[in-house]
Length: 393
Ligand code: PMP
Image 1 (cartoon, rainbow, N blue to C red):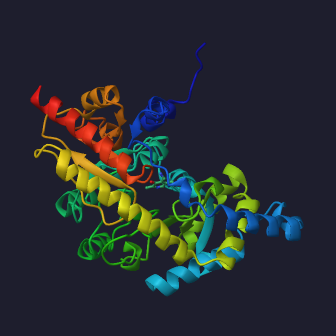
Image 2: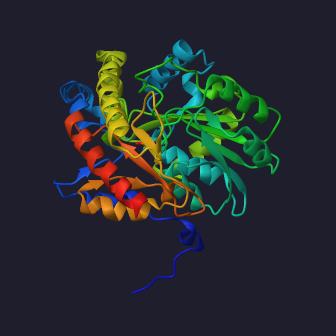
């Protein structure tokens, strides 16, 4: 049976990662393919206690419909954290709670992008954003991301085309693990000044820093015409689907209208549980535990790469987040490597879906947060052997 689908569905890539996850269901496969936080770190007991309290003691409000903008005390909690840690001039009014930060991507595309509008994406870029934006049929300008942030010449060329939007993951990017330096943050802010381009900064991983110095969001340097997206998915638990967007009143009003049409509001239950948990627990202590664990796992992956990967393969050296990004020599295909790797029972995500031009990439994304160090070492040994065999063939 076939249906008359809307044109927009033709330009949306399917999530290749979801397809790969099917292959990695086999328990004998060591998978670096997922992008999931480590479930052993979910604060289950404290969250269960928070859930009991808000439902048993405040069921009337917790189980009720609520405002589209979100639970006011939760919005104030988020705003206070930005004020205290980043010196951002943000109040609860500037924040709208979203159903995961993924919803913020959909809503901002909905309110900003008409078919054919130009938007600027990082290359490689976050697959979920490529999917969300492609629904609205934009034209993409791409900017390569290097070790310390975007290629500024390419960004200048892209901005000259007067794009509606520049979307960036400024810290420990998914997929590459790369982070904008403070100098690049300031330089990008400077380039954006005076333009009409909305800058959307997506920062789900910034708190997961296990080495180096904490950085201020780029929004600190360019507050006007900017959106800042955050989420509790990586620092509490993704199952709640609680994210948020910081936006000026003009943008926020439009986002609120779009959200009303999408889902009325984000789950009141989730919002109130997360807020109760934040009130009764020390988030920074919890984040420190996550960072400690991810730092050890990342280190295991880097050490194994030094030992087992062929010399021609380069690897990013992340100071936080959940991913490393490997690059094989020019002309190699990470899809071909993937087929070899699955035979050797190790999986990763080939770089292809992270490029809007759908190229056959020589790059691959490696996630280190879901295996113990010994398993990471064994998986990297298998992968290193596949790379050597492939490059030699
Ligand atoms: N942005 C980026 C860069 C991500 O990596 C993710 C999660 N994979 C999201 C947004 C969406 O996260 P959530 O909807 O769980 O907040």
